[in-house]
Length: 283
Ligand SMILES: C[S@@+](CC[C@H](N)C(=O)[O-])C[C@H]1O[C@@H](n2cnc3c(N)ncnc32)[C@H](O)[C@@H]1O
Image 1 (cartoon, rainbow, N blue to C red):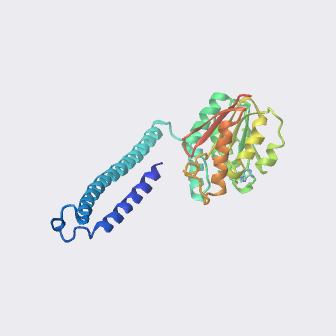
Image 2: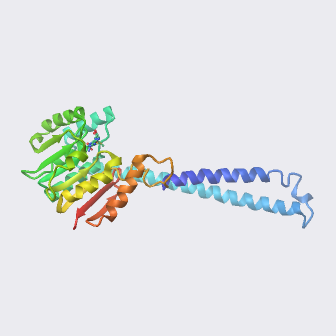
Image 3: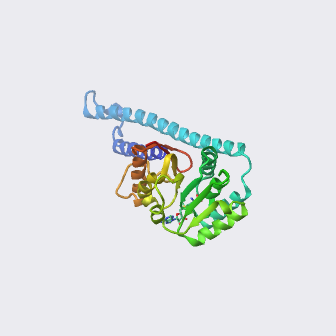
C-alpha cells in the first residue's frame, strides 16, 4: 500500500511533466495577442488551468509522501519503544540472532519469537511439531516456554544447521526437551498419529505450505493450535498478482486463502513480523 503511494506519485509527476511539455508552446507569443473566442485564446485558458491543477497535484504529492515518511518513522519508533519495554533477551537467543545474521540464515523476527513464547506459555502443549529448524531460534523460544514434560519435535533435513541448533539447545539447558528429525517435513508428517499433536509451527519450504496444512490439521488434537510464519512474504503477498510472481509468493497467497477458509480451523493472520497465521482446530 505504502509502496503504491510512491509509485503513483512518480507516475503523476511524469504525467504532469508531459502535459506541461505539450502546452509549453501555447501562448508563447503572449496570450494578449490571441483574439477573443479564438482557438489560441481557448488554448491559453487551458494552459492556465493545467498550471493551477499541476500546482495543487504537486502539493498533494508532497503531503502524501510526507505522511508516508511520518508513518514509517512512527512505526519504527513504536518498535523501538516496545523493544525497550521488554526484558533483556536471553543471551543464547541473542547469540543465535547474531550468528543467523552473519551466516544469512532466515529466522523468525524477534517479535514473532516472543509471540510463540507467550502462546506456548499459555497453551502448555505436551507435543509441539516444528517444520523448519535452521539454527533453532524459534525452537528455543518455544522450548523456553514449555511446561514440564513438554517436547518439541523439530524437522529440518539440513544436518549442518541442526547440528549448530543442537549446540544452542545445550547452551540454553533445553536439549532434553527437543528431538531433531533430519528428514523432509512431508515425510515426517505422514508418520504421526491423528490427534497426537498439540501445537504445530510451520516455517519450512514456502511452496509446500499448503501440503503441510493438509497433513498437519488431522494430526492436531481438538483445540490444537497451528502457527505459520512468512504469510506476508516480505510485502510480496499483498501486491497485485503478476506473471513475474515467484512460486513462493503464489504458494503463500494460496496458503493464506486455505488457512482462513479451512472448515476445521478458526484462523487469522496477524501483521506481526513477516505475517503470522494463527489457527485453532475447531472441528
Ligand atoms: C526459515 S528457515 C527456519 C527458521 C526457524 N524456524 C527459525 O525461525 O529459527 C527454513 C528451514 O527449512 C528447512 N527446510 C528445507 N527443506 C525442508 C523440508 N523439506 N522439510 C523441512 N524443513 C526444510 C531449511 O533447511 C531451513 O533451515
